[in-house]
Image (cartoon, rainbow, N blue to C red; front, side, top):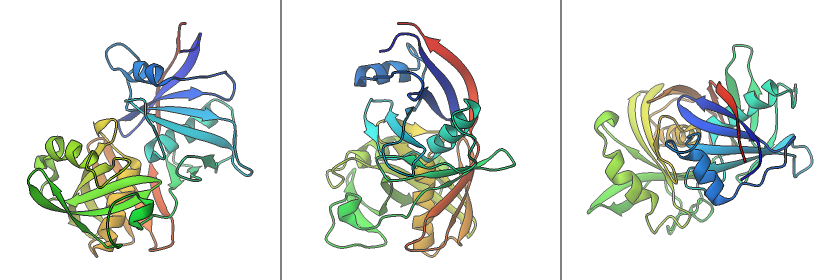
Length: 278
């Protein structure tokens, strides 16, 4: 790994991260090193490792890289973006209230609010199956998907990373542990997929559980919440603002419609800081 690697443990609604400053220290994280960091018994323990590096494109403040617990690099993480923004300020790397992060999924713009929460411009959702990516003949609000011997109905979209959303009557008793890994690795999703199980409570409120690719079920998923909310809007079941309750807490979401970005507001909490020996 690295000698004396400094890190910060953070979480957004229980979706937890090891955040590493790659701006002021030389960092080279192999897949094995990331898995070791993420291991909850032999390492620090987290859902994702977040690495902040100098910007790669003009106009960006930092490059923000996300690695799932299995070591795979992914495009986007909304809860992580909030934590990364809070980390940047706490570490004195920037005093800007609004930041621009380069990610594999495109630019992400978190904004620190006066009440201690963080708002993130999550970008414009993608519905084109080829860009998600998802194997389908044409774009639709939902699709039939064969899984576990049954035909499910799922919404499919990308918010930087790919998501499938199922509507369920009772999220507490949804078959997340069974259907999550089956859908995650479904052959119609060439890069795998995050799977959301959404219960609509009313036009401004819902409940959600998310099975994340490479991490399993997490207490919260920012991009998953955005995807589920957008799916609900497209189904005509949510208003242009709504709150989703996840196992780790609630996120507030807003979307003005096609071609517009999704906005998400939620907390970002520092748990502790540490140094890993060589």
